[in-house]
Length: 502
Image 1 (cartoon, rainbow, N blue to C red):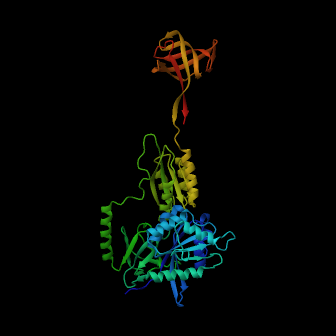
Image 2 (cartoon, rainbow, N blue to C red):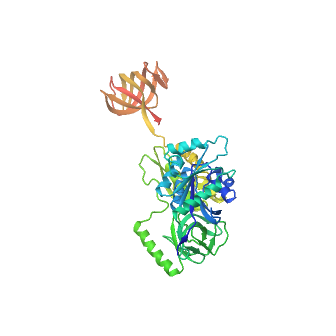
Image 3 (cartoon, rainbow, N blue to C red):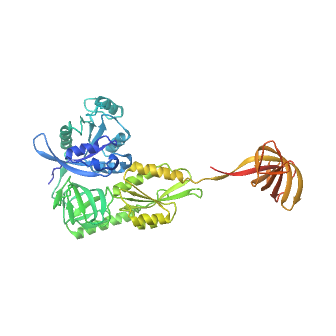
């Protein structure tokens, strides 16, 4: 039997527009201080209770998504499993690039949404200007010629936050969200990580039904019995109902963020469903996570292999996406040779040792001393990051330093042969005049006759007024010893070559 279900709300918007601060205020805790660089870099799910207009307490599940553009894939996953969206826009800054990107994601997933104009407590806040800016970018608010609900608020003082929650519950009521607690649970993986002591756990959102400890959970590539079930606070639970976030332990392999799952009471039914899913996987020829960023190179390109390790699947995908966006200099080609979740290990270094050009990247993970020593032994770069734009800056500089230098032969001087004095085998003594540039002893020369190159040789020795010199400038006469298999003749031209790095 279907009953009313709590809404699942995704919070999106531009970096530093106050999304995490808003959620911190709502759930009366602080996660911002622990975030590297002040940026939320993980998807989190939180459940709160709020008094509805009729006096009843109702629950709302919030999905907190990262604001940096590199995490747009994680934002899209959040939006795909949400019922409603809150688009946070700063009253100081107005619409920014990720604001528009978030709007497109909302529209793509056909989500009802409202706008939260944040930071109204700031001295430079200008809500009216922000409203106008929203209209200029196709976001038309209620009362201003549009239909998008909005609230002006301050996550620091709490002004407007209760009204925001009232509005969320009103939109949820209009959406007529339903659940059937009697049926087995189904939902989406939000995030997953590996704990060295406890194995693989994943934060999931229950879309329908009831998730119970002891049930068999099945994705498209694995089936296992749920031996550990916790609510979003990390408290052990026997069962959790639809719309709740849950932390599930017992996975055999790391699930991908966005993976669809469902539960079965019996192992036989679960294994049968898994077999069907695996057959579909085989038919679609699912690619490995370590597929190459750039699978082919040309003879003129330098291949830069990359090994990436991150703390979670979602972060790993975000880092890969960021690397794909980097402007790779001409002459280089990136190739993702391996990627995975967990600390950087000696095996990762050994994988990277196939090429001295390999770059090993750890994001939100660290390598132990033995691993770092091994990377030094192989002469490989192993760098660790916890802020995405620091990784971007480092990799951009690293690639710029690895651009192959092309050695190009350039004509630096031309001389006209006036007289051939003597010849002994390949050695010829000539006299001439420098027509352009300069002659340099010891350089390779091309021999040109009537505009056609007829041979080559080496300018072994130069003389001026019977003195041995290293160079002869334009307009000066010279004597020279030229080694060449081609017999020189008056009016021939000598073109002196120099190797130049470009």
